[in-house]
Length: 121
Image (cartoon, rainbow, N blue to C red; front, side):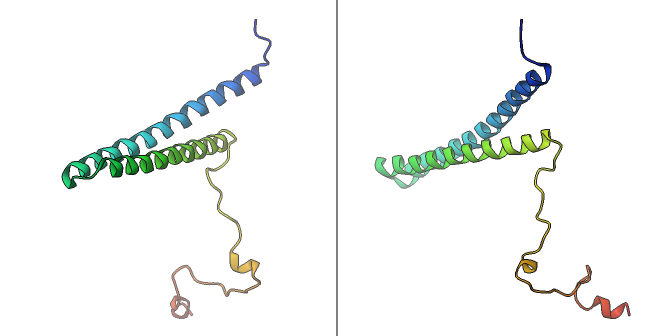
């Protein structure tokens, strides 16, 4: 019999689903990029008569880029799933303008653009 509390079990199940979703998204992106990249390299090698060294070098670069893309998509998807699970927005924009940090006072602007506020007077 399981000695795990119900909320802890549900949290583990949620983490397993988050992992599965993030892993699947990362595999689809990285796998698709790698397959298309390698196909392009081999087609170019046949068309332009490239050497084996250049083919292996470019394939290595594609492999590194695919691995980086896998890690990035997995971590980003994990972050998004955690935020959505917590009831938060995916990304919250900053609530301040950088000009306010520098102490620059900006006049209020019309949403219609410059000059429109003169016509309304």
